[in-house]
Amino acid sequence: MKSIVYLTLLMGLALPAAAEYRIWSDKTGYAVEAEFVCETGGQMVFRDREGKEYKINPESLSDEDQLYLQSLLPPVLYINVNKLQETRSRGEAREGTVECVVTIKKTSTRPYTGRLTAQLVVIGQDRRSDTYIILSRAKGDFELNRANQEQYEFKSNRVRVGFDMHRKVSTEYSGYVLVVKDNHGKVVARDASRSVFEKVAEQLLKMPLHYRFKP
Image: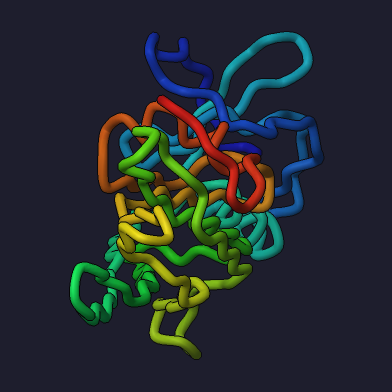
């Protein structure tokens, strides 16, 4: 890469979750083995096996490497989780259903070619025992491109909630956790209805249906 300039990496810039050494080539055919480190000021930072760090304009890379680089740079996402709930009352009993509809949209202008995975956990609360319970789980694998207008939507299963004093059932909708990861397993976006859920988001993703917990 004839146009590469050596630099000292600025402190505080994050490393990608899956940095790896590979051969990077520019449009002239010049190649170097290095790992991608981060983006700063519109320039890409690379590090070779000797520890030297380089900065290069991404447009000077080969078309193949530009596509690969796009898959490493996480997009900026807009996330909306809409709760759809139906409730019916019969005497002292109140019952109904709830489901969550998730909309994910890319708001950054840079193209992104990587696949993403969204995991949603719908959480209820048992008022009798003051514990939370996993009501529903949903997962979606997707890409954000022109074909889908850089937007993806999926929803959870419809689950039953309600209160019945005679049957001693009392499960109410309490919230959700949504985590979006790239194909390297790096978290791209996280959203939660409550901060207490966000703090234990990774643990909630692993909990089975009907699991009860206290954050």
